[in-house]
Image (cartoon, rainbow, N blue to C red; front, top):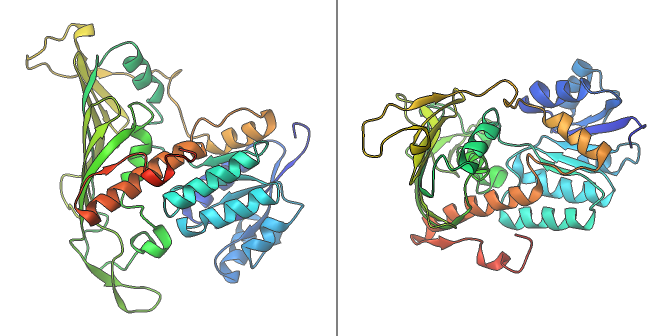
Length: 362
């Protein structure tokens, strides 16, 4: 397709599609957004008017079936990611799907298997933006032995996003729409797994401090379907220990970051500011001393920025691989997220990869 205009159809034009995907695609040469389908006809028409998109569809199935469309951008909630992706691949279309990848691990594996059956089509999950800027710097430090042997990992995200009990029920708290996805667990696990081995065992607990909210569509108070507080203990494949702490009901002291501790040093990546600090014997730090962590700059030449849409189109045009984020990576974080949910429900540790998929794609 190097000399052909790439025709894109949008299914679900939410905030991320409007703020990132539409301008990102329109900035590229020989790319046209030719169709849109939103949840309701009125919102579909409004998006088409605002962004001068020539064609509208009332059903996503009809947009996917249209032979005049080459690629689909899936901007819906997770409950539609799998069926739209499977249908799009079946009709020969490239797919960029919003994160989280799917409702659950079963759907993620179905999507991966379908992509294997269509290797000429590009399949990509919108990546976690957290840690992208300093990705190369952290990777190089680890590669050169800054940490030594990894021993401990701590991942945390504390926010006040769900602290108001009067706030309405969000789609993210409706498990029929969001599945096993909870808070920023999956999106930060995706960031973490770029740098460290995958988890092999998890033990978790979850809780909803605010157990019910008003459904804005029905006006009825409903139980929330996902937790607002999550804690996880994990053993990574290399034997390192990891802890995760997530909450969206903390009005004070918010923050988000990753700590990596090794035999020779440690790194802290502040995911809210893209600030990296660390200490290592490789740079003169003495073990056991009260060393002040040094600032580790992210040089302009190594700083990554958001270029998801350009990467998607480039992969289509060149046939090159997707780095951030392919379906196999999505399967890994979906298995992790589901394992956390299973562990919390059963009150026992869960091994990874999940047993039923050991002979499958993961």
